[in-house]
Amino acid sequence: MKVNKAVFPAAGLGTRLLPITKSIPKEMLILVDKPLIQYGVEECIESEIQDIIIITGRGKTAIEDYFDRSIEHEILLKEKGKHDLLQSVKDIANMINFSYTRQKEALGLGHAILCAQNLIGDEPFSVVLSDDIIDAKVPVMKQMIDIYKQYRYSVLAVQKVKDEDISKYGIIKGTEIEKGVYKIEDLVEKPEKEEAPSNLAIIGRYILTPRIFDFLKETKPGKGGEIQLTDAIKSLLSVQPVYALEFEGIRYDGGNKLELLEAQVAFGLKNKDLKDGLLEFIKNII
Ligand code: G1P
Image: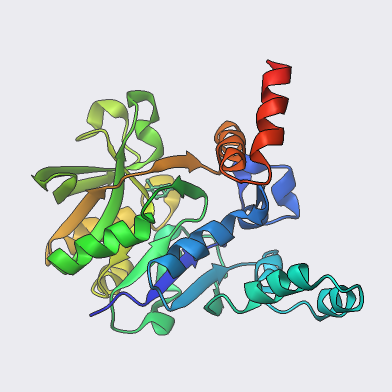
């Protein structure tokens, strides 16, 4: 069955980026010229996903407004004859089909995914954590869908991380069965490095079979008192294989102030209108 739907959990409070996240959802922070979440949405479109389901919460209406029409802007731009800008504003509202549902309490990533069950139904789906910004020649979601088509079971994106970063991630234990593809034997949410089974960390892209919902419903609060997706996937392993793909691409943690700044520079240098000016600025200040 084709992977048609992508779930974007977006109810988190963005604590690591305070104080801006007091009033601006972290998903709406700008990366060069677009909000962070738009990069994930574009990645899905390029990977032939048809429907985006955004799990929002209180204080997150800016996300819905952004992907809607903005009649005031459209009238103004039309009057002023700014047709290119008008088109780009209209295009955002027509990118793809969006649905929204609310996670009423911040009970964890696993709980957020469970909130989308009715909108997903009985089909495989993908999950995008939009603060994992990934610069890749082939969109990471597409890389993962290609592996899903081969193995037909859940696929997690993974990346090797430094020892000191292990405790920030879900970590897998697996056997490499083809270059960059692992069959997962175990996984653990944010272990201390001494207890970690490897340095292969789960990054915010998943393809999951609908069986995950049976386990999400049963999952008790784990690390940090939250219902962890990692724990539900560990239970899923008892009935189905789960694979991991060490994807090709550079990943920036958008919830980390330094990495967000690095992403601004890296993506800025890829933008043809900004590249020369940015390069000159960097040369001048160093
Ligand atoms: C979540 C997951 C974790 C994963 C990480 C990737 O953690 O629980 O397993 O490694 O995303 O970014 P969070 O960063 O939301 O604490």
